[in-house]
Length: 324
Ligand code: ADP
Ligand code: NA
Image 1 (tube, helix red, strand yellow):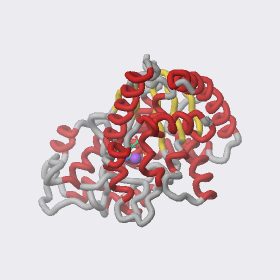
Image 2 (spheres, helix red, strand yellow):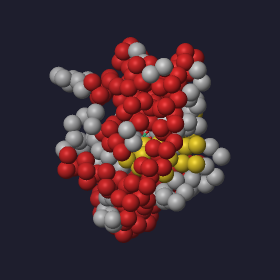
Image 3 (tube, protein in one colour):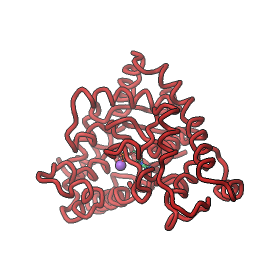
């Protein structure tokens, strides 16, 4: 039995990448573990957000968490900003970090590139993420491959603090799935699929209609070789579709490439789209039943209370160790 923690930003509707790379595992890991899942709104505001929009996204994300199978009787589900310990330990983690290591984070470099005024929160995002995880004495963090570097920093900060002030934090391990950890953009399959991609056709959102899913996959960038084989380097588009197909059906990549030998991209894409629709449909149906339900607020309130009970102990221990 392990303590699990992870989060998703309420920046828009989660993508198929968020689901296959992370959220699907959140649900699966509930079996035999103690899971804590968070709507990380304080991370979302590292870039400007429209207040009405983020409010809506927080509510929608809560419904989606439940729709993918997070069971509030077994797991804790809460909003980050409702547990002040995150910001408090986040500050302590900032004071444990150096500018140099934060400036080296690839996500910071990507997100700040070309910006006139770089929000300081973009730089201090990783120490806040470290705090999120460390507050719960987390052992395992299910995340996509893009979070590997932040996970390494989290471990470094925990270790540095523990060495200097005494053993306060558990060192967490990332849980990055062997397949699906990096679902790529449908338009530019050398880039990760992202919620914030301005090209909406590049991204499948978990709440997309059947029609949109079919349209987007049909338009997905492939290559001119007309052969369905797995090669991430020279055939990133087809390989990405194979990953998605495999994850949505449980069929192995080998089985799929054998089954589609000699077949055209048109038929292949139609079947991938059908598999994605079949995967998302039951989630969308449950989502529709949950959305707007007053029960959601109650679940989030109770989740915040339970999270606070755990988090405050770690924060106290960290402050005591620091002598503050
Ligand atoms: P985004 O990067 O799409 O804004 P978040 O930062 O909220 O999403 O990430 C939520 C989780 O989804 C993280 O664990 C992240 O690693 C994972 N994730 C994000 N994009 C992908 C992707 N394209 N493929 C697999 N996992 C992903
Ligand atoms: Na991310």
